[in-house]
Amino acid sequence: MLWFPKNKRTWLETFFINLLKAGPVPKHVALIMDGNRRYASKQGLEKTEGHACGFNKLAETLGWCLDLGIVEVTLYAFSIENFKRSEQEVNGLMELAREKFRKLLEEKDKIDEYGVCIRVFGNLSLLPKDIQQILAKVVLYSQKNNRLHLNLCMAYTARQEICTAIQALAEGVKDELLIPSDITEKLMERCLFTRHSTDPDLLIRTSGEVRLSDFLLWQSELSVLAFLQVLWPEFSIWHFFTAVLYYQHNYDAIQKAKKYAAEVKNEEEIEQFLLMVAGETSSSCPVQRQSTEVPQKDNQLLWEEREERIKNFLERLESKHLECLEHMRSGLC
Ligand code: FPP
Ligand code: MG
Image (cartoon, rainbow, N blue to C red; front, side, top):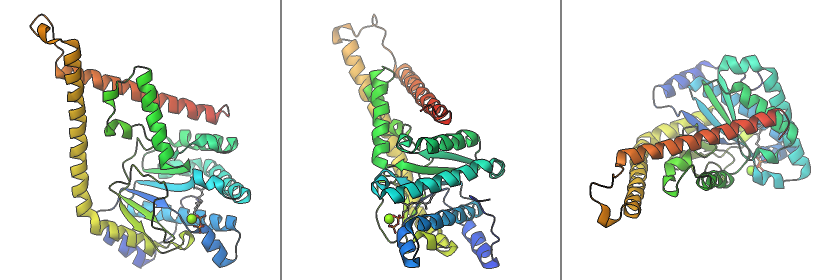
């Protein structure tokens, strides 16, 4: 299969896979596949050919991920910044995406065989209409699968993702589905494109650049970051193993930090709720009427009301998202 080639592993590779599997394996790996053009120029190829080699490497890497038991992969395939590249390169990248996603649709049975759920994160309206349509078809077709979640960031930047989430929250307040105190870090996370994902455990960037370039800025707070001195098309299974080993080396410290962060987030949510209760009590129950004649809503009831508001808000967000994908699939967007 084009996207998930079945390559036979050497005995040494198999040995290392089993060795790594004896330790903690990252569940979610994020990839910044950098260095395609430098590779192209090194090999005397056109830039677009460098990107095509990059795609082949991606497919190979997905095979390694499956072998290791990684259940989620997020790829930085095309950033909003990339639109600033030459028209020829942008068109070449779009053509590559068009071709590969068409092939993926033709291999639908394989999507099911591997149980792959494909999601696309980004401002898809910036992409050509026919690509939007193909992507929507792939996403809607694969949405029930759950063995491997493959997230493609296309026309994506993390800042734009965060702004989109803030807009959704602001709209929720404007439409009186939410009240401002409902907005916490936890709710914000549920408005990001990645709301159905776990945060990446390991983020790999190739090419020697040591920055995140507006990729998963919110979600990578506690990810192990592996910056590798290799151009993406030259990334080998041994580079991959090195990054996983690096993750295992840092595992205990990261788990500790994750536990602490989860506690802080829960505390923040409760504190914010109590502040809201205090505010509500002082405005709706003036001091002189705090006797038995005024039935005071207890915290439990207010908490349930808050949960209900959040549930309705998130349901609307989800149905809007689905509606948009269905429009895209039908070519109406
Ligand atoms: C960064 O290398 C790579 C990209 C901007 C494109 C990444 C895309 C692929 C690997 C193909 C994926 C295709 C699909 C259909 C998902 P660069 O161009 O910045 O290279 P440089 O750092 O050497 O200049
Ligand atoms: Mg680059």
